[in-house]
Amino acid sequence: MIVALSGLVISTGCKKQFDINQSPNSPSPDLATPALVLPGAMMGTAAVVGGDYAIIGALWAQYAGQNNSSNQYRTTDGYAIGTTDFNRAYNNMFVKALKNYQYIIDRTSKENNWALNLMATVMQAYTMQVLVDLYDSVPYSEALQGEKQIYPKADAGYAIYKDLIAKIDAALAKPYTNIDPNDESADLVFGGDMDAWKRFANTLKLKMYLRMVNKFPAEAQAGVTPLLTAPLLNKDAKIASFIDGPGQDNPLYEQNIRQLNTPENLKPSFTLASYLNANADPRRYYIYKYVPGGTPPANVVGIHQGDYTAATTAYPGLTDWRLNQRPTDPVVFISYAETQFMLAEALERYSGGAGAKAAYDAGVTASFAAMGVSGASTFLAGPYAYPTAGTLDQKFNAIFTQKWISNAYGVHYLESFFDQNRTGYPKKSPVYSDQAGYVPGQWVVSRNSALNAGKMPKRLAFPDSERSTNPNAPKIMGLDVPVWWSL
Image 1: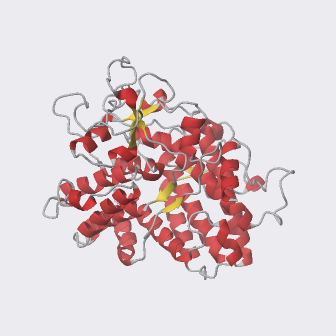
Image 2: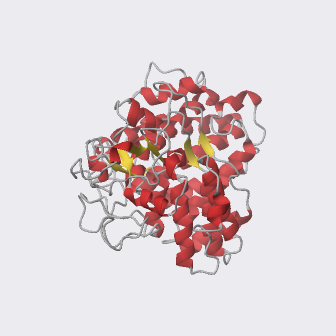
Image 3: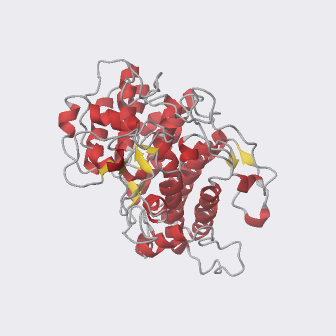
């Protein structure tokens, strides 16, 4: 059943999966049970976060660059995304995911099914949080009401965050551990493990409170402090049921390789590749694929970010490398490694650094393990040793650089785009990556940037699909305008 649902969500385009409130031909709400709707809703989130938005993350977080011999993602790599480019992704997040989570929440509240209620509440919060982080202000309090409110207002991102956290807390206060065994198969993330859902809920709250550190520092500290001793994720929150088949595979592989019928659009970004090469990090061969097979060369060949107009002869050896995408890769919502790096940051900010090294080491170790390579302990004793006696700047640079690398697992690229906007780490280079003095791993502005000089994207432009139908939609903001929690 999991595979079939996976393929249905990914391959139906803009059709309304489990859209029980709109079409007269849809099943009756009495037939569309929460357990029936939940898997499709989870796949709705995964299809966008692990597909359309993963492409943005891969390019804007400098894991990949647009191939200089193809054209598919030039507007994304060059920061020229318009108001119509990601309409489908935005619409699907509401129609295939958020709307169906709300249906589950409403039904399970009436039925006292608090296990599925917690799952839907956490997944709805996660999905909405991604939209807030991309767009800042989005319809929320008046959304998801069907014909009761067809022109929902857009709420401020901070207000949405506050309400999402309150809803998570309310769901956690219910007797959610009593899951019906018949409902366990509906859970594509943890298979009915309710302790894991509690941990996912706490970890999502940690992430959201850490987003507040720049603009609401007191609230961030008050929210984070009790979470330092709360149970957090001890395994990945992910969907890992994909198989190698059309419409049944990882959504990034489906969209970028199977549907486009070419694997060559996304090449290694010189930014990340240079850092991995400089440290002889074996994870580079998980993140990047050497096409000829056999033993790859010592170093990954990458393209400088946004240099897609360069001559095809400008990068000898680039044709042999690509961003490694696999049809069976999971879609990660929050990984265990990411959890540990968030904990390390929080401990440095609010606990005097006590325990931060242990969390950082656990994050690096988990990242190596997730990518199927050994040697984490050697690197932690060498180039990746935590700067315990260093400055806070040095510690954060270490934490967020390793978090950046770890987020390559499970097409979780977008998270490091958010991190850099919130913290400034990994650091931004004062020179382009082909210039003397460039420090491997520092981010650079796209060579063909459509933004003002020196600017990098901070958000997406609000989609025309909403603006053209909703007079209460927010106004269009430039891609370089920070969202509410950004630096």
